[in-house]
Length: 417
Ligand SMILES: [Mn+2]
Image 1: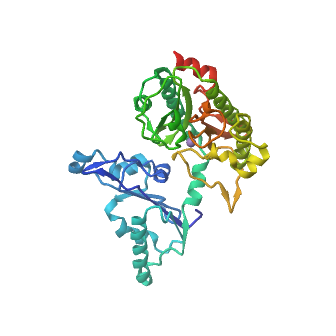
Image 2: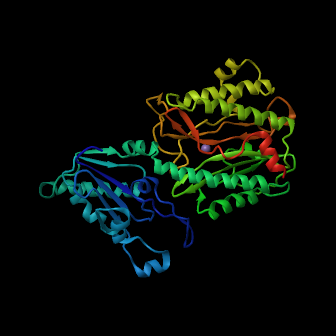
Image 3: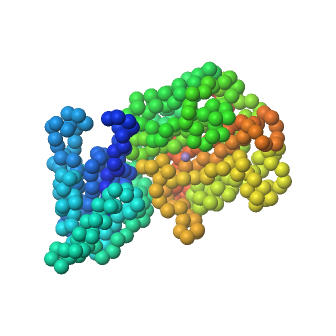
C-alpha cells in the first residue's frame, strides 16, 4: 500500500435461505486473510497513515443477542485475540470513519464487491467533501485493494501451506472412503454423504458443493442434482475438497462402479491420466497456465484422434479447437482461501509465469456427449476428470494431493473390495 494509505475491508453480508433460516455463514476471504475475523457485521481498517495500523469495527458482546445467534468475539476479543490496535462497535463505523480518512493520501477499497457498502462509503466521502475546510479532505486517491491484497494471497506462506496440507489430507480420507464404500445400486447422494461425513468428522467442511456424477452426468461440468443410482460397470466422477480454517483442497477422481473399467472407459481414463502427467511435468517456475493448457490439449487431441472421436491431424484439430467439444474447461486455476482463488493470471493479454509459492490445480478431463458424436458407441456418455493440487517450488512442484490414489490398477483394486 505504501505510506499514508488506508484500506477498508468489510465483512461479507449474511444471506437468508428462507423464513428466519440463514445459510451457514462463511467469512469474506479477504477479511479472513487479513484479520482472522469470522463474524458478519464487521469492517477492518488497515492503515499506514496512523499509529493504529489495524482497527476493527465489529459486533459488541450482547448477552441477549448471543442467546439467539451465538457467542461473539466482542471488542476486547478483537484486541486480545486478533491483535487489533483498537476496536469499535460496528454501528459506529460511519460516524468514526471520516476522522480516520481525513487527509489520508490513498484509500484502498474493492469497489464493486459489495454495492451496499460502496453506497455508504460514497455518501460518506461526499459528506467529508462538504466539510473539508474544517474537518480535513477525503483521500486524494482511491486504489483497488484487490491488486496488492490478491498478490499477497497468491503466494502461500508456510502457515497457509500447513492448512492446505491438512485440507488435502482430510480430502484424501474422504475420497478413499468413497472408494471403499462404492457399490452398484448406491445413489449419488450417498457418496456425497460419505464425503461430507469425512470432512465434518475431521473438523472440516466442504470447500464447495461436492460433485458426485454417475456416468453421463459427469459430462455436465457443474452437476449437483445427485439423485441417480450408480450402475454396475459404470463410472462415477467425484469432485470434492475439504476446507480447513478457510483453505480448501480441490480434488477429482473418477471411479469404476463394481471395480473394473471397461475397455472404452480404460482408454479414456488412461488418456486423461497421460494428459495430467504432461501437465504436471510443466508445473514449474517459468511455465504459464496457457502453455500448460496447450500441452494438455495436445495430448488429449491426439488421444481423441486415436480413439476415433476426432478426425484429421493433431495440429489441424488444435488450430480449429475441435478438442473443445470434449475438453471445454481450463487445466489450472489458483487455489487457496477460495476454490477458484484470487490473483492475476496475466496482464493485458500476456500470461504471467508461475512462481514458487503459488498453488494451482491440475485437472484435465474428457467428456464424451451421449449424442451427436462420431466414434465408438462404448465411449458415449463417458466423463473422466483427474484433478490434483500442486505447490510450485523453486525446483518444480510438490503435489499436495499425491496421497489420493489415481493409478488405474490401484483405483480398481480399491473399488472392487
Ligand atoms: Mn478445480
